[in-house]
Length: 108
DNA sequence: GAGATGACCATTG
DNA sequence: GCAATGGCCATCT
Image (cartoon, rainbow, N blue to C red; front, side, top):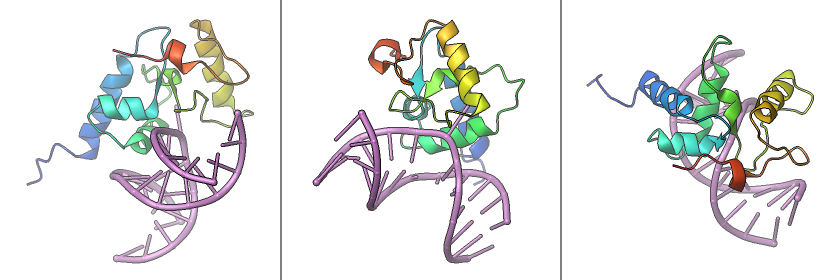
């Protein structure tokens, strides 16, 4: 059957919905997004999906960091700076290029 | 079709 | 705290 619900587009939609549900002032990890989307272990797919996001997207992609509480971009990258600005403007505290996941993690 | 790459994660030393 | 390793899946060459 080609009506598999595990098609890429379906996964993408699930991931987008999860990301869209992240509240203001909270962050989450790629693995967490994947898990909440019903795709445990596909953290990498989340990243691949976000990379394809158009700039005009309404998704709060900046609220997603890796499991180490760090931004997954090179420090000199423009995306890094943008994400850092957006997060700090939402009250997220960065500590030595790193955030306290325990404090800001999005937990249901 | 095979190999390399990627906005990752958990474990181990 | 950091580096290396194996594993997950999709995309590109």
